[in-house]
Image 1 (cartoon, rainbow, N blue to C red):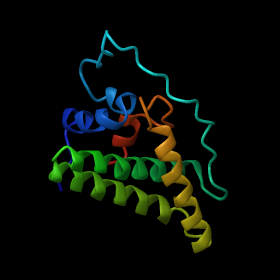
Image 2 (tube, one colour; image 1 turned 30 degrees about the vertical axis):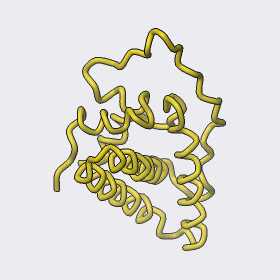
Image 3 (cartoon, rainbow, N blue to C red; image 1 turned 120 degrees about the vertical axis):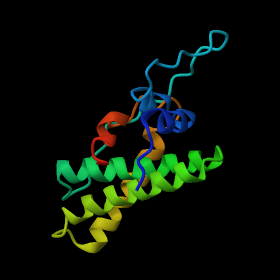
Length: 142
């Protein structure tokens, strides 16, 4: 399976979350001089769902972030990139879920729902509220 290069995925993520993707680019994107960047609303610290270990938290968060970003890749016309992000996101979610085999299935599904909603908030606007960076997530996809 192909893993997107840093520049390719960074360009796709920059559409939705420039700060999340900025670490993957060689030169950070500068805000447009004529329009100051709007500050993203403050997002409260992401609570870790009950029963989720720190390792599983990172896998689940990053997996859901990649799934979220895949929609922007698809909208940008990069079907292959979107598919790769979905595959990688799915693998990370599966790995995180495997670490939580003692968690009741309904609690695991509830935890996943929390990640989906939290990702939408954290990656909104500039993505500066992201719990993990692009680089931190991509180290898991190897």
